[in-house]
Amino acid sequence: MDVKTGQLDATGMRFGLVVGRFNDIVSQRLLEGAVDILVRHGARDADLVVAWVPGSFEIPIAAKELAEHGNVDAVICLGVVIRGETTHYDLVAGEAARGVGAVHAATGVPASFGVVTAENLQQALERAGGKAGNKGADAALAAVEMVSLLRALRRPRPARRSAAS
Ligand code: INI
Image 1 (cartoon, protein in one colour):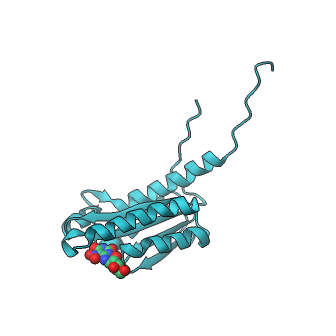
Image 2: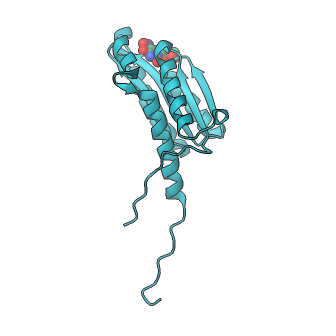
Image 3: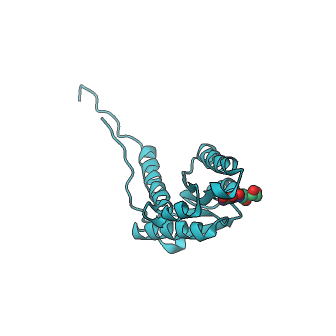
């Protein structure tokens, strides 16, 4: 059996980070968590590009641009959608998720989803470095793992030895 897994080593990898400015008291913390984990796993600060967009709805188009033309190995998508603040919570959150997923499919570049969806600001803060961890850091780790896994999957498999040899 040939089992492929990704390693959590970001040495030499380049990342785009797309961050929604809406609720930036929280999204700034997601960004800090993501950058911290990338650097601690071997990425260089100079190999990170950060693009701020107005809100989570705009994340996918910037992620697609970075994936296609940004010379990055993966895109990490960070945003914060709070139900208490909007009646179109489901639309914004749904479009962000659908759009980020479409970036994978359209480009082959992994795009990880670090958009926090929460009922209120308190709950969102808990997911951005509070007691529920940091979803930005989680998304960054997922991106590192996927870049590594895709490289492993693309590596040609050694030829099978024939029974006669
Ligand atoms: N964008 C968010 O990222 N989070 C939200 O909670 C939010 N609310 O509450 O509306 C939000 N709206 C803005 C949206 O993402 C777009 O920027 C806007 O609709 C312009 O296209």
